[in-house]
Image (tube, rainbow, N blue to C red; front, side, top):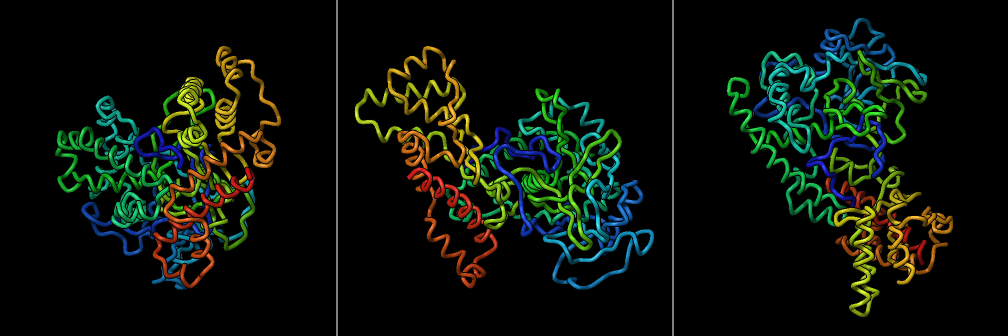
Length: 504
């Protein structure tokens, strides 16, 4: 598994949906975001438009959110598949609304052919929902110090809690397109037994447990005291850990984070934003649109030709399937997610190396080597080496680890005395996938042993997964969660078995 993010519950790091993530990559035509329905539960309130898309499009015009005449919004759903409701917008050639034509939930479809560089829509910054634009923005700013947290999300979450209960919130038409909070499909909402049984070995159960612990801590130590201190702004019906957990999942899946400029890389990441219209687009690795940031607005621009009638896709970042299901509640079926990854825990490599020691002196020397790698910041107790289908994403770390753990004792002493300096990387030691068969025998054996130990963490073997996937009748009888979890497990195991072949 990949190590759980340092933040209590992960957002898209430095994103724009579409910003690269060094730990994995993107998604799929089969991507199944939770169906977007009207927000249900204690925060619903008010008489919503019977067709939330119509109300949302009207709101877009009011706030100056410009939609290209070449695109139309759609939402899919069996109840209305094939039905074509009345056109909305300024004329029949502007924006048409129906519930068909997208891979999941609401989406956006090209009404005419679109060329690269064409503007699809522009969202004025005044229409963004953030801790700064909400109606309690001044209060959140004044009490900023008391709202600091590891996640950095508390101010936005408090803004959402306030706006959701406000009958006259200017964002009400936008909320109507949100998924039903009680039906989000993130694994944090699965029963613990089911989550562990289906996702054992993938890294997801451990990441979710960290999320849930930090959500509870953040809610009880920061969020609830703040709401209780301002009872005029937060009604009792929104003072709920369960509602807070649902909003965390929604922000995890639907928010954006404006990237820092290159010269600002050392600064804290920007606070998350809710971006109406942009978060309607579904996700695909080979996406055909991208969000651009400018001082006055956020612009969704086509990056590839989009034929008439085709869906417009953004990308949520470079992510493996385990990250997609953890953060968004869907995965990309194998083999579509070409950027899927498998992780080998760093401590698993240490364990594999320990298997080859016989005397106590050898064990002590191995721990000395490990401590030195820790000093070089190449390994850590909770870190992982990340392997993609075509590259090792943590090549420097894994190369250094194999080198130090496998080098002769005398060579290690000299290497340590030099603090690891002056050791130039040799081409024959390259950990590109194609070069792995050419590695030193000791390196290949340690890597192979580490893969075998990693495969033991799963409850099932590759053959069992292949049998399920190849039998369409059996596969279709699996529950949705079982299918999603199977895709995560299978993709990881295929990468690990590729390593076995390369190191044999």
